[in-house]
Length: 157
Image (cartoon, rainbow, N blue to C red; front, side):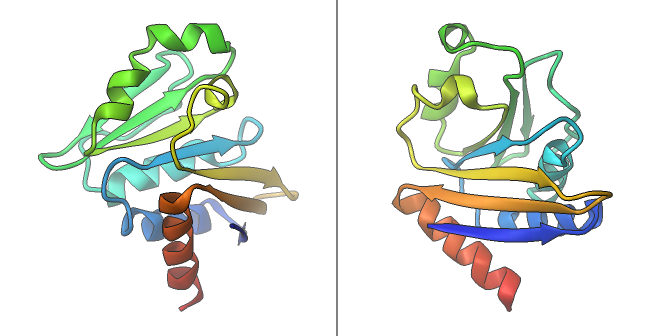
């Protein structure tokens, strides 16, 4: 399943994250692809805020992984820029995947693509000039398809 959303501003990207947050229950994986400055971290920041988590995500490039928590929810923000597949085993990714209350948002997810068969929502941020972005959603697996279906219906309501 696939869908496209047009974001004309960082505010639109935040609204998209707010809509997505309503349907996250824990156990979801979101891959975010796109060039530097495309809005991936803007999306994750808004997602954390809408999930009611403590702390505000920043680009995780220098720390690779940050966890944001509330009493009932958790978000792992992973930035795999410059990492390779063989380096994934040292990150504790197995523990992240096993946490049923956690949502994993992975920027630059290429090193994980061959390692994870779990359902996931993939988001490709495509620059369109100025602040405009085309955000292409692809659902991989039944759970991700339901998430994308719910998100699409909410955005079209």
